[in-house]
Length: 150
Image 1: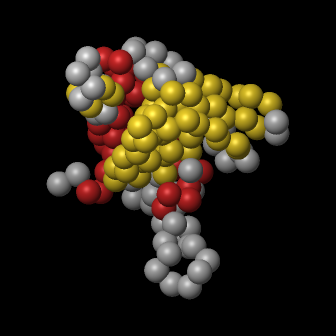
Image 2: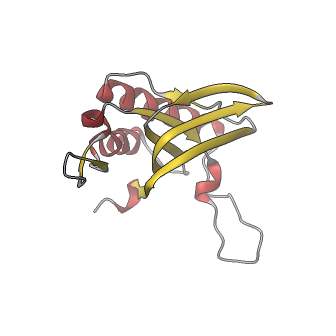
């Protein structure tokens, strides 16, 4: 699984012009599930997301987690995170997981994050054409791949 985590002051997801989900300060997370990913990947990434110290403390040092900062999480599934661009100019999505694997792992990731931060995780709609808006705070953007945890 691959995540793009952005610290935000605000983020929202709209579908067909209608607001679906939004958060104030917290984390906007794009979630890409790949063929071969497991529930262990989802749980490990949720723990990393909740504990990552990328919010400023009183001295302005990035030393607080989303939990410490009282932030929220908005998670959106994005299969394009697993694009292969090795050949040609048209990305290949052959490594992106199908719905049967991706939906349960995305949902598990969201549920695990919610349990860890003790707040509901706001979500997009799997497979929908979504418009995502955000104000990246910092900017702070972190990419994490569960296959690179060693």
